[in-house]
Length: 319
View 1 (cartoon, one colour):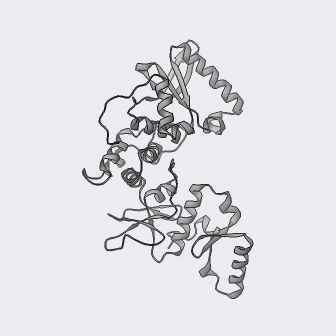
View 2: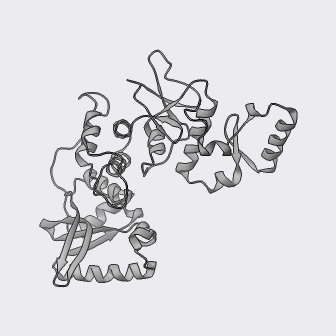
View 3: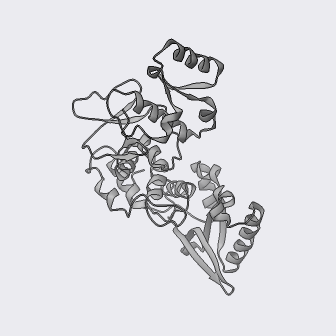
């Protein structure tokens, strides 16, 4: 059941149960046979052109919406599905089936869903869907998913980055959702809370920091601002002051997002980055750069960081 039947996306979903006449059922079947419609979930269909153009996140969201429309009771989405509804970045993959909360006495196994025990009824409405609160969602993900998935979500939700609107006012809501010590995933959840930093500029930067933690590399300062005799050079993604080393994550957004390009072409951004890097090197700082492919592989990230002069350090870890 929907919390809000007037949600704008409702117009794009067609239900078999709404085809109450033979003519309507024939029309729906013709759309499926011609390829104009695609099945989203049992008994729910939508225009193929919209589904094909959707990102993986949007497709999971459509699956959630279809489930909400056809289930006999109001669904409360949780875990990765709630993260999807909140717009949190996912450096892994979105699940094939929605994650939902279940109350006491309800079965944990069900075809068509991943079910999680509900410990209270504190839920929120996000675009017509009932979802777990954002802090609870992040801590649930932290308990069950790799650091590489959970840390980008936690970073994204916290304040500190001027290019996005934060979902939380600070880390306190995350701390309140920490599981008791000894429970499954409690150590990983605490590590996510310890590492989370809203200054992270992108999911790729957060993924890189997760990799650094797993590799036991020294953790950098974030968004350090540099100056020279000409004035402000700018902020760098990562800085290791002891090593006089700057790290830059080259994500697509740096060259394609309008708010970061500030009216410049992609080529002008590349040229300006070169001039900026030359100024940083003249200050005595080494600069190393990497992108998504490197950040997604621990071996490749380790090679880049070792080549830049970093070495693993000893520190307590749950990884």
